[in-house]
Image 1 (cartoon, rainbow, N blue to C red):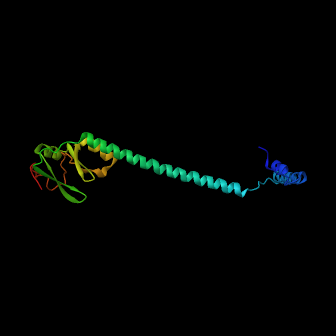
Image 2 (cartoon, rainbow, N blue to C red):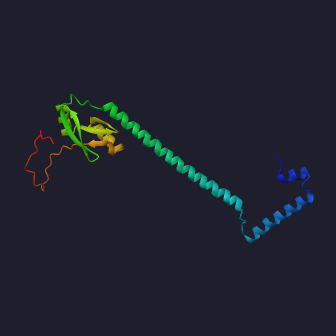
Image 3 (cartoon, one colour):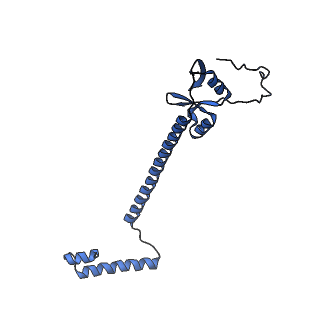
Length: 178
């Protein structure tokens, strides 16, 4: 591709003397800049570089948001898969098991064996939307690492007795229902 000056010459828009004068002026300006040690500022080039920098920054932000959304979606899918793969049956629900969720007391009907596992802390209640599922404690710990808001109830089995507890001498009966 020929230069712009050559194209203008071929088209007859400028003559050789005009091109020669333009080149001489350009060379004089460069020579003066070298002597003075200054650099001419090209505003259009600077504006283009600034626009390019802003566009690159915006693209990085959008990519970060897209990656975060994809990560959240993957975590949600992992949680659903863990719950579906490891959920336990409620049994023949004849015993009401009360627990709190979102500052409300809710009731889940379970069998005596499931109730014993819930009290001992071997089973944990997981709430996804409107469904309540029972999963083993190990799975509930993995779910809590990803999203702690889904784990509703974790009974901790502690044999330690606090020395400052005024009710330490009183044992809570195992069959106490509230």
